[in-house]
Length: 588
Image (tube, rainbow, N blue to C red):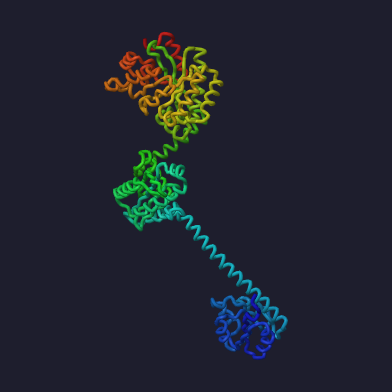
């Protein structure tokens, strides 16, 4: 701790005797200097080191104490020096005036040594604490500035790639949007870039290699921009480009092509040669009222379109895509409500035995009765159900309803009847599939011999060994398996002969072209022959007329379905059909 002699006291009084008395009281403990007029006092107070405290007489020959105090308080260098007035004037009005101009205390003449020492010591202590507080505040403010700088670095820069962050990109877009409103003809573009299957790099080579790869990619991407532009890391393996002063969409397209071409080359990381494919979505500024997030949403929408085309493509956003995205979101929300509110129906299309003409089975099909739109086409809602995974929930419900209906028909109308139900890829790969099917069979009480489950080639080929295991387990439960839409997928003999499948269903596209394409006829004949060779029954889907029916019979196809026989029917209409047809058959 500093000794009191490190404190400097300035005494201001025009009476030498008063100065002598005060010096006698204080000089033993403090460094004391004196002035006999106001101007000299101001001069000494301004010199460095400044006095730590001032004892100031009010009545001086040139300036009174109030004026001196006012001037010292107005000076940035001396404003914090505590000033104690020493005066014989103890009136309350004079005390109030002193405090108004900045004094901290009064000492009344004739002075008491003990009071002088105590007042000086107290105010020096207060001043010391005040300075320590100022220093602490300065340190704290510096730390806050440093932390603020660090936070800004974290917010506006990506630590891995040292590129600007998503927030920095959005901020730059915000500034550009302002410019579009001020400057006629000004435009800019936003590009979002994403890599295909980048997670495979992390899972196979490790996250450290993945991070190194991102750093290399970032350096390459920086070569495509000017000083006015920004390339930012958005998140994960997604990057964004802000391109300033863009007028022609052609130049943006050309840049996108150059970027994709560069990214089609391999990257070497730690001895590994890595290929990464990318897609780009492009959104251009417009005269419409937009926000940075609006543009980012539009670029992301275009990016999804590009990714749907496969790696190495870009897509430019247009307003119709925004409306389509809104409609797609609305459709998804409507479907969720439809499942909750039981808006779905099960319709049944007959599958006819081509030898007898009798209805051998029905295929259960989902139909959606929207509360305001009416019946919605399956071509519209099935893809959305599959993309969102809602198809699993709906599929189980449909299977249960179909099994209930089969039980009613077998009991009251036709005992020798089967039901076919489609299993989506989501359902087929679900770990609870076998248990769910068994629970429904037990719940509905049907004979599993009368249940056929239809699966597509794409469902099976994803994991052929698991598919074979699942199918074998289902067949052990006496459930038949139908390979649906055959001919539209892989149609590979290398796996087809391994599959324990009971029925092949020829896709409708082959049947519809039979009358106009002789080569197609030969293909249908070969599929029927293939099925029989593998000891499978064959169903032709999409039979529309007598000529198709005749050819299918001639070629030995066992079953057919299509509008020639009947469209998909409500349970009531399907029951009526069974009662009308009876034993006579639909086509004899």
